[in-house]
Image 1 (cartoon, rainbow, N blue to C red):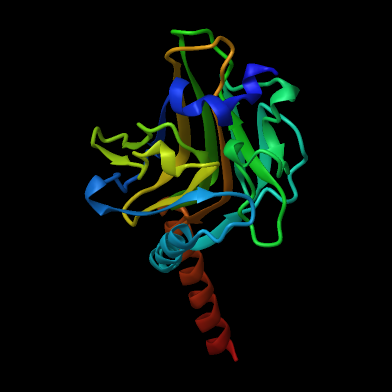
Image 2 (cartoon, rainbow, N blue to C red):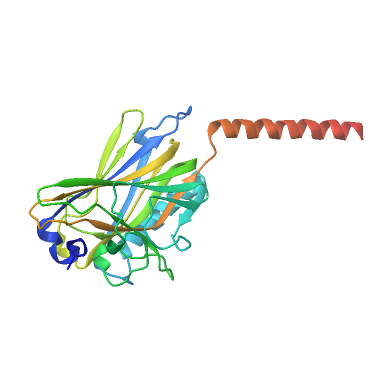
Amino acid sequence: MNNLTGKISTRTRFWATNLGFILLGLMTGSSLMADNVQVYQGLDPNVTVGSTLTSSNTAQGNYFTAASPLGTYNLITFESAPLGNFTSLNLGGGVMLTLSNANTFASTGAGISKDTTQPGLGFNTTPGGANFFRFVTKGIKTGASTTADATFSFAAPVNSFGGYFTGLGGGGDTVTLNFTNGLSEIFNLALSNTSSCSPSCAEFFGFTDSGSQVSSIDLSMAYANITGPDNLAYFIGVDDVQYTSTPEPSTLTLLGSGLLAVGRLGRKAFKKN
């Protein structure tokens, strides 16, 4: 058996992972302030394809309530994305997903997948859906380490972001928010007991930051193959990515000027009549 497909049986002995979000802000008049950040998390242990993700769904509901007033709410389900691996994928709505140093071998099932046979490698969470994004590191030798990055880039800046993450396990997973103004905060994913992740743990993770203008979000997955065997990789599933976007301040200024001009034209027309 290819070791790249052996994650389910070997993960508790051989795997150390770190998950991180890196937020890059636009250079606008609105600075990124970590004090504005609110995090929403819910963990569901021992889940598989079709399981009810009670804690994750509760966290997502709380996130949705907080995020919806901040701007235009958007949801990416990957259902219309082409199956298979990629290096850069247009998700529509001005969103690009770009992979760096990630696994590109077709045999791993990396990329857009609808696999239901290996829930420990991630699975779909969209009700009535099938597709999800399977994010995979490169296979590495014993004692080696690697980091893969999946970057979501937004044409319109965002002030909230969330998603469902499956295939979790192995312990030591963290989420790190790094801001361009030099502030940073670290939030731990609720994973400490790998025995409760059979065949998988699932988690909704989301945040809101009403004062931010974020142009890209990087999901950075670091993996160390501590004791072997060689050629192991780490997998997670990502699905139902959601965010709120707002116009940039310059756009809002132009929009306001346009409305003012329309108002003035309207008064002139009225006077002429």
